[in-house]
Length: 87
Image (tube, rainbow, N blue to C red; front, side):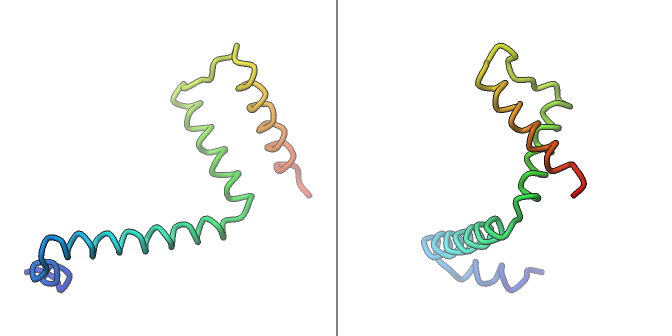
């Protein structure tokens, strides 16, 4: 047994379905953008650290000879140390 959503899609033409789904995804995209705007700096930083930790655990290492990458990693370490200190 189909739900109401399935019935709506069956009654639509292909072009209507494409337009409908496109508008739905655009609405979802707008909601995601708004949620990202509301995300605190600390939460963004924590997410970035989690991504770096994932890369480290998967042995995805940056080239140590790349001075630009080293400088970026150094900055992130400084930020991590700063935000990890109790205030």
